[in-house]
Amino acid sequence: MAAPRDAEIHKDVQNYYGNVLKTSADLQTNACVTPAKGVPEYIRKSLQNVHEEVTSRYYGCGLVVPEHLENCRILDLGSGSGRDCYVLSQLVGQKGHITGIDMTKVQVEVAKAYLEYHTEKFGFQTPNVTFLHGQIEMLAEAGIQKESYDIVISNCVINLVPDKQKVLREVYQVLKYGGELYFSDVYASLEVSEDIKSHKVLWGDCRFVSATFRLFKLPKTEPAGRCQVVYNGGIMGHEKELIFDANFTFKEGEAVEVDEETAAILRNSRFAHDFLFTPVEASLLAPQTKVIIRDPFKLAEESDKMKPRCAPEGTGGCCGKRKSC
Image 1 (cartoon, helix red, strand yellow):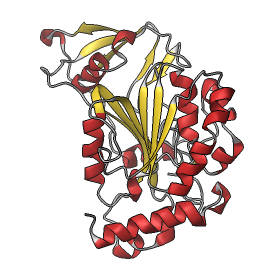
Image 2 (tube, rainbow, N blue to C red):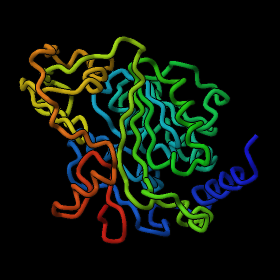
Image 3 (cartoon, one colour):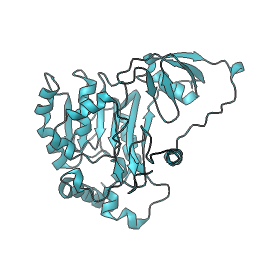
Image 4 (spheres, rainbow, N blue to C red):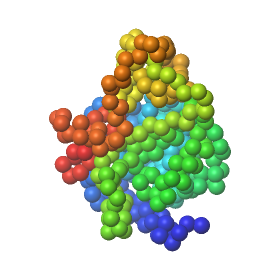
């Protein structure tokens, strides 16, 4: 059973997103804005196919569309009105499936109301989207099976949950081995004061820095060594160049040396067949000089040196009244 404070937070979030907000214009701060530039054309086209009422109730802080989605099973945590689900529905195709789960009943009802519309719009014979009313901390109770999804996404939702560790544990259970948690959210560099935690507007809207993380559930095998990888190309929308994260960009046919962790991710995920792998012999290994960035605030510092003052593509959005992270 949730602690009294947790239950109060759930009630406030449900009220804010279900009753206070009617459209994105009702957000009470302009703390986060999804970037308009740098979005691949195939995603822009998919966004244009989503019904305007669903889009108007979108309250996310990033773009949670990873690459290589054909035939994938995807779970959207905090799916709201279903905008991201309907975008991904087109990208996974008729053989893929999207499940959205949200604890705000009003939002789930909006999402469900447009199932038939989008099925016809996308040219599918049957819907490939399911919406569930439930809490993302209790996926099993909502009927979501263990090791049943290739990808789990979330768009500015985990920050609203009191027990974030429980969410991550639940996600780990439902992901297949090789699966990915791809989520955009907001982060504080210091412990947030009780005044801010209890401030309903600040709790309900994005704040501080927005970043997108990609985390993979890997099988328990021997650790991979550093190696050279060559991107084969051909992933839809990323045929010639794959910007994997803030640290690695892979161009078609170009050899790139990657660290042990990145090598293990590429070898054991849905990207395995998109790369050629060449182990680097220990005797030939040079000291690793590339600094791997994992701290979103470090990434924000780097991007702050660039113009315009906005987070780079892949980090989610722009934060603050001046839209700088």
